[in-house]
Length: 326
Picture 1 (cartoon, one colour):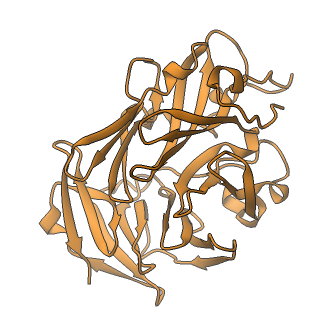
Picture 2 (cartoon, one colour; picture 1 turned 135 degrees about the vertical axis):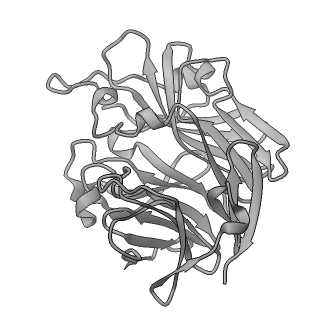
């Protein structure tokens, strides 16, 4: 397997590992890239007062794979990720995290031109001016699904799959410092049976939610409906089963308020033929769900939170709408 490398020149650090004889290329594995067809449009998130946009899948080296705006829509910086690796035919960016004026970190998978080799899983770190400061090849079992930078600039990542290893020996969460050195591993994939081999999220069970807020890295797992919180100061973790508000409900977006409450955009199950109009619910730390009215942000979709405010986004005109949820 590729070793975790510590280099500053990305052309040197990114290595495409030969496949094992019995393996098909990971990029062709429908389990790993089940959502790839959904990734060709821009994805958005709200974090640390920033609107972050990225192309999930890109083959154009001239394109801005990552764009970061203030909440007023003014572009602050952008990244040409694919252009950093001339021998790559394409790049998938799974998630991006940023802190204004400080650091941008992302998990990316590069695919080599015309070669049946395993794609290169990477952690890339930039300064806010868009300069690459660190690039690291990752073992397949550390491929990044979600990423968040904490208040001390450490980087927290949720792993994508077990890389054909024993899930009980593969970390669910890996913490890195800003130079890419491993700071810690928390929980194992084997603790989450449905998600043990590979991250499961789709239109019938919902999407993974994650982020960092007030000293806590958190993630929410669909299917299991489990909320996991990790204190970034000491790695202490807690797992809570939130359940869902009702039957045939699919949380397609889950975000967390500073208070610890979850906000969910919930659709009907596609499998049951009733995707319908999205409904919005809040899960409180009293462990119950309550529906709230988001009509004031009609035409918008749930994007994130800003403290206790819930933020909705119109993907057509990039308008932001905020709500106070009781």
